[in-house]
Image 1 (cartoon, rainbow, N blue to C red):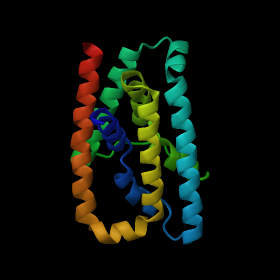
Image 2: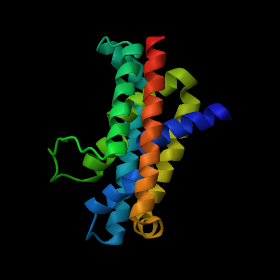
Image 3: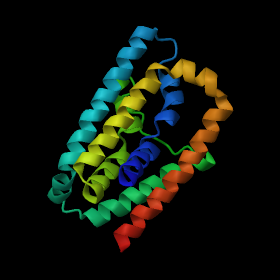
Length: 189
């Protein structure tokens, strides 16, 4: 049970379903609720497909590029630390804005927001460390939570308020840094 909770919170920390809500709201501002719901469903479904493929075939993909799991774990740890530090210190690193005119359910919602490089690395590492069943279950629960939060985004923002959302994001940032350090420690061991 403890392992399943650890994997759930590792995915939760990297995916950051609550922290994604303000981004979703900003991207869908002025869009009718029914269309927001369709965008949310499409984004989560596309992220789920990407994460499923990467969780199940990530090791083969790494093998194709001759990248060891330890190197990928180290890189994933560094990415998680960077994401965590961005959240903790409110650092905005430049991001590629290509495809901004395309369907926002693909870019930026499905990837990189939900299933970004850190989440892809995390899914591969967790599958190797804890097995596919626990990892896929943790992904499914977090993706379902993400969908629920996107659908209820307006209501949540009113309840948490700006300060509540910010405080939660900072805690998640610290957890991400800690998980990243653990990934690096295990890669170097």
